[in-house]
Length: 187
Image (cartoon, rainbow, N blue to C red; front, side, top):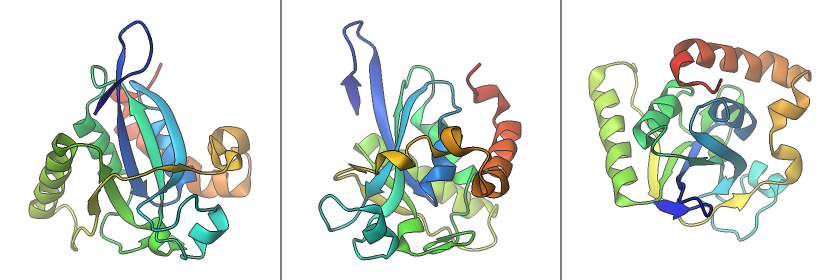
């Protein structure tokens, strides 16, 4: 899904992923060259304009997601999928680490048929490769609506990096990510 983002004819595309706590995943995808914006929010539920507390209590059906605005000339959707699958456990149903509930499910919300096809292709190849000992449970669903999370959730690691959760949970994931994907990081 290409969208005109400004008058100099730049093109951008959207990707929407649920791969656990959006504080962790936002911090990772913000590092990628070609990604211009990452917003934390909610998708895949049945309640309009959900609030964080409702989502956390599992009352809305939403997943915590990140919506990524990227330049497909600089980074491909396939590369984003590779980061997605490498930076969380797609084999745990409704859980990432200590975060448990449907709001933490592994999910790809595709924006067009090309994204749908690529998401299924990557998931199928990984499933057949034997990389994971158990079945990949990542949901692949059409994107319908994105609800931006409350402002205090945006750029959480950048603003609260010294807090205990950031130091013990997000920072180790970020450091591991930077080692594996060093050639795709912003300068």
